[in-house]
Length: 363
Image (cartoon, rainbow, N blue to C red; front, top):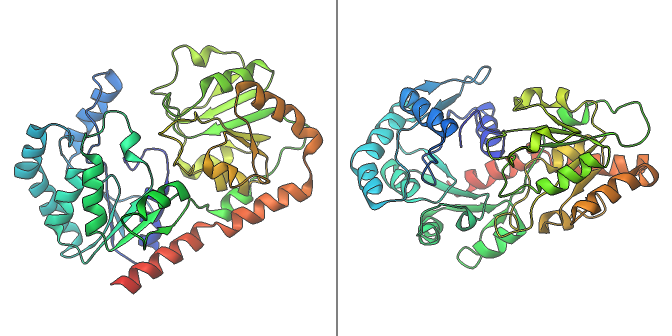
């Protein structure tokens, strides 16, 4: 993904590798599907052409370089041939200049482009960090299952962010391990709680795409009298949704500034649609929400049902409203402390230490 997209495990792990002393290169997206021809997408494509091959160094991360590759989507045969003949060799040449030879590669979307890059880079170790069920993505290459199998055969290490993904990966890689989302615990635990009774402002932060988010649930919550704060990319929202009374859209906010934007939130909602795309996800934000101590109301995704007792579940729009209205009576300081403690146990420090240890043992 892009470095400046919503902050997720990709950027977090790159930052943690750099802070641990490893010279790190974050390679922005090499494409997964054909772009849509709308103004927002065209602006991104033009920005990629203007900024391709440029190296950017995020502030305060001396050992981290962000590299923008110029490649075509790995969809059409013509695009793949052009990638293999022209674009991938250029990217590999650039990366060798930045990172040297035989790097450790952490791979994400298992596309043909990813495989071509790995083959050309000749890494000391390849680590496939599987964070999505890519076969469920719209518009992806038709052979994504086959290219993922190829990556599974090549990888030295395989991790999965949810038990559903792990179950699927272990048929090919019995040694795959679970590595779920994490949290910068101290930053989110330090967010002060509002000094008021009841639930007034609820919040969702993240990618606001129609394929994942249940906008009917958000609309029902707003119409029930709650203030619904939304933080994230609005590129694929339902048409006219932002005009709904009670919706407070704040746009995209840098991850460093996120705690300040959550200070007066009373509860979080994770209203995901229940479909093939979402059934294997483990929301990157879940432990960030729990670290604040505030209640969380979420769709009954498999990863959320595993957290029942720490997370309230809601399936239909009216269920979200009912649960939110009942929180004032059911909340307690003990529940808040339990949520914080669970988040502490799932800190990024612990996640990264496990990943680093497995890489070092495999080298």
